[in-house]
Length: 287
Ligand code: DC
Image (cartoon, rainbow, N blue to C red):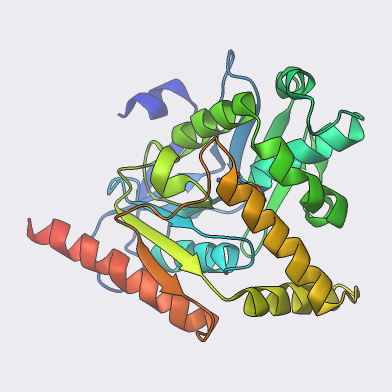
């Protein structure tokens, strides 16, 4: 039994092969039941992954897929669908930074007050609850899934995520969550800092216009109408902050595969990543 499985009450059992995962049918499957907790007596900010349903995991394969890229490049949808197709866990690291940012705002702490933010980490608990379609985010037990996408959080998140103590704590948690493999992590620094040895690194890009248009369509679906130009300004500002910060800036890892999604459908971009992962699995089987 792995060290992590000994440490935490993981309920793991072997199951049937997954019909969906083309190219991996002969792989014995491991299903993670109920929970995937990783915690943390002494680590500031506690993050758990909790499975709503039985999630098929390729943890015996240890596959780690890193998907990085700027805001609106399609990371979340791609990561979620790739994870679903391959039977992996999806970890949205942006949601972790967003949940902490919400706490910062609610506690009335200035996003520039690094010391106060470091103290807040000590009492922050985030649960990423994996459902069939949706990843629910709980902040100290409260469902903040929708709230962390609001404009005030989006405006402040870059400032909070450049705080060194925040990055150190988040990266430690993300490494612990992905340590067993069988994961797709998405963010800004997964392939460069969190898992520089990831099996597959994808860097998604798309034109500013496309990214703003996607964001606008998303907002319209929830009944909010924002001008395209204002969304372009917003995204460009966030790109600048995320790329120029000193602590783990948004950059493409030299060995990452860059994929421009401007002209691609979601299915096409997901297919592309899945094919790359299947190649890796095939090569491993042959080795
Ligand atoms: O992916 P997103 O837009 O939900 O991320 C929100 C912010 O969190 C993003 O502007 C920068 C920060 N972030 C980060 O610094 N590192 C990550 N791995 C993920 C997100």
